[in-house]
Amino acid sequence: MADALLIIDMQTGLYDGPEKPFERERVLHTINQLIQRARRAGKPIYVACHTGPAGSPIEAGSPLWQPWHALDVDASRDHLFNKSRPSCFLGTDLEQHLKAAHVDELVIAGMKTQFCIDTTCRVAVELGFSVVLPQDAHTCMDTPALKAEAIIEHHNATLTGAFVKRVKAAEVFF
Image (cartoon, rainbow, N blue to C red; front, top):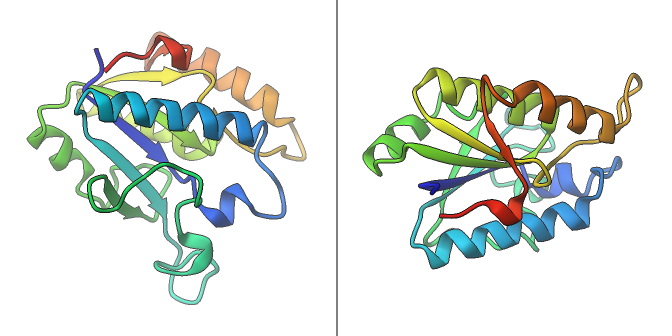
């Protein structure tokens, strides 16, 4: 049973930017289902917002920096925090919050698969956390080299075993 949910970079500027994430509506719905299950179980929800430097389109507090309006997060009870690197741990107090909440197993969802999802999964394991990656609860955009679907499939396969326990979101229990 998972102890906490971490949602990464589901922000207006990324989710609703000029390049749309692969299957974005389905992924949003899936993440919102995870949020509801974590809430019902009384488990903490952490929401990472990628934050650019002052003057950038995603500087803290800007319209594009905000969590996507249909993401079912609540700043009054969920733990929203800023990050400026692909790792949700580098330069943040996430590790301290997770340890204070006695989190051993962390569910990770959001975007972008090949950057922040991949990096955060790997670092979390290095820090001693067990990671559950719902294979259908993270996404990204097409790149010049690969379609988003191939990127997601590749990372689901690559991270499984050494870094994450890969499951379908419907199989995640808090």
